[in-house]
Amino acid sequence: MCDHIGVVEKGQLLYNGPVQRLNRQLHSQRQIRLRSLSPDEAVETALADYPGIADAEPNKNSWEIGLTGDDESVAGLLTHLINHNIRITHFTETTSDLESVFLQITTGVVE
Image (cartoon, rainbow, N blue to C red; front, side, top):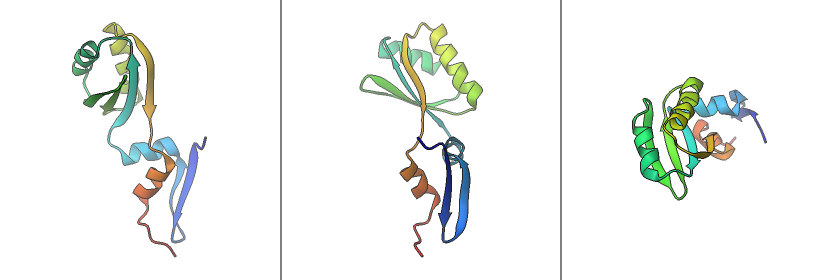
């Protein structure tokens, strides 16, 4: 898997660096995917009680969570959920695929 990219458009280097940093620059929120064995109502209650939650939507057997903040906020969210007895089976930060990132930072001009 690629973790460092360079994006060039019309001979200009638009970005050179880690994919994760570019994702953070493009998105004001961190996107977290959570799966748990706890009822949705319990997860929803715990999420409502955590600062920085911008949105949280159940999606089949998981939750898609928008979180503002840094790595401390992400770690704090995980700790918060565990302290609220949410039985977590999966917790990860998701990122956009490279094609989506490329389309967001380029203008589509081909030379």
